[in-house]
Amino acid sequence: MRILVQKFGGTSVAGEEGRQGLARKVLEARERGLSPVVVISAMGRPPQPYATDTLLGLVSSWREWQDPRELDMLMACGEILSSVVISHFLRSLGLPSRAFSGAEAGILTEGPFGEARVAALDPRPLQASLEAGEIPVVAGFQGACSGLGVATLGRGGSDTTAVALGAGLGAEAVEIYTDVEGVMTADPRQVPEARVLPAITLLEMGEMANEGSRVLHPRAVAMAEAHRVPLVVRSTFSDAPGTRILDRPLGTTELVTGIVTVGGLCRVCIDLREAQELAAARSHVFEKLAGAGLSLDLINVLARRLYFLLREEDLRGGAQDLLKVLGHPSEVRRGCAKISVVGQGMRGVPGVMLRIHRALQDGGVELIHSTDSHITISCVVPEDHLARAAGALHREFGLHLEEGGSS
Image (cartoon, rainbow, N blue to C red; front, top):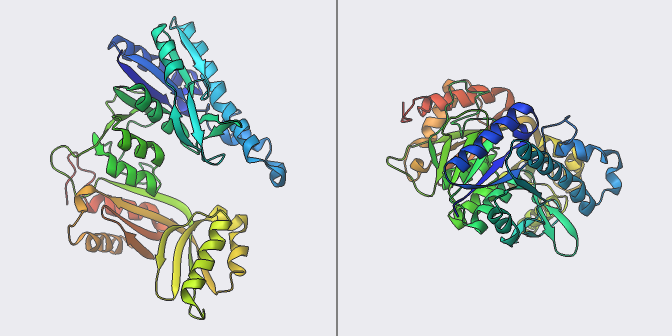
């Protein structure tokens, strides 16, 4: 049996146009001799009634009394509702189908509520459904937590569900359907010249996901790499071929593949010049920040200073008060954004940072600070400069050109 896992996002299931597009993709798979397994996200986006954040809003006024286990119970409802709706819809078109919760699909989880990981998959329930000629419709984002009911996989967890099923069922591929035609060179809202990439490597996709791209969840990319699951990102609403995500480059590797932008950040500097025991002071700061559940980005440790990024919402949620009681002077710069240049071809190539600096300078963009890895250079810029920065870097590295290449 040739199995294809097809994951559909919230915009694909919320309205009639999306559902019709979903049905076309399922029918196309069957016509190609494949047995589709459909993975579904919650319907729509806030304020639509069954979106995840809308469901969480039902208990938001009782934040002090919230329980993580019960929040997972609540959030899991969105995907279960979607799976039932889509299963009914497919049957109305003459396509035999059956809805499954994550637990019923054999997904077992471990780890904390709200951020659980897929620990194991029992493929037998879905295999039996496929052998009966059905199309399994699986609620994404969730699985069974041993002895404690349901646990969710974190935001974007339906992607992880799809890849886990693809690995466990030995699927030929996993197709991720969304409202864009594939992975793009940049956010088209900031760079109108951005184009769809025909292919990208898992390494680059993982970097883009970790830097803030919302096309695929980072855990899904890591799982696909670990289990060698072929991935394709496509649009529910068009017949475009989408973007293939490969385990290795095909042909010439471009210097830069894509640009990822994230707004709503603030840059924090903690001054440790008066600390008596520097190592102990650093450990104390990081321990307090971790204990408050704060996720830090672009951490830069200098001799007597610590720099990092926080989300603005974390600052409003109490992080600013925490910074005041750490015992060290701190400076917070609000209204920041991060822009990351990603490309497997830049590994070991001199002069890339020079080109980035010049492009930002010529574009009138203030560079606050930067950091890098082997295939990513990330810069902090003022948020009101973000679109200008993205456009400047997109042009500098020739990403507007159909075949890529440098300018």
